[in-house]
Image (tube, rainbow, N blue to C red; front, side):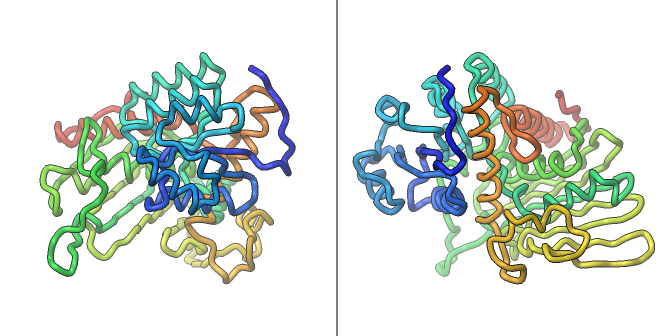
Length: 385
């Protein structure tokens, strides 16, 4: 492998696979990589339709001659020009796209869920090790400053022994109807369940990562109940489960796409022997804290005693002018940029505490497989890590 050093002030040149302009995921990643000027989007196989791919290139400010409808052709023409490829296709296509990029010798950043089964993730892990490659997976909710502050508080013992965690991610998309009373149709790939239901891969992967990021513990055993009650029969659209984590932490999890009134209601509640905290994604600048003496506090990035959330990198504008979803994504991408620069310098994939890859994905997928088994068996199932 030819390792070269790229100075920090030189932008990392990247290409998209998927992420056409009409897709929300494409626009989100495009905005996130641009925010801190660490990346330059120079090429893309944005769509298998060449006209759509070129139209997307025009929207993103990419030379239309570097827009492709075939990943193989893009890799053949662009591999020497790129520092990484960002994979934004539907999750059932990730495995082959990531594998092809690794085979071409390129670092890869992949949208969650990495793949659709733990066995597929294990195969990618083996390929990664053989090629001494680079593979990061995006979990943007961990990029919120107050979530990173909460992680620091837990690690510092502010809450004492953590004994209970409640996490939920309710949405309403599979229960809503249009003005004519007809169901609002999601993308086609969301309406096909495999061994792991698509709902799990879409929402529960975030909850697994939030628990892992905040607690540093691993799931050991689950019991779960899944149901289908929305506009699309036979598609799992709501799940409730209990998870026993290492460290004797009990966690309740709910994720749903039939929770009317919730657009994206990600909520985390932590309970310990000395204190408790709550964070809500729709109001992400605030962390609600209570201690065992009856005190209650609302914390934000400007509070005294903040150690992480007040770092200059998170102050793109003054507190009171809220940072949100795209800024959290951008924070995560800055961390990936640091890891990519280090990888080019040393040839070693080292992520630190803020970037996650295939190992975390394997753990999460095994947890989702256990939830799926429990939903059928109606029994506690072990997470085979």
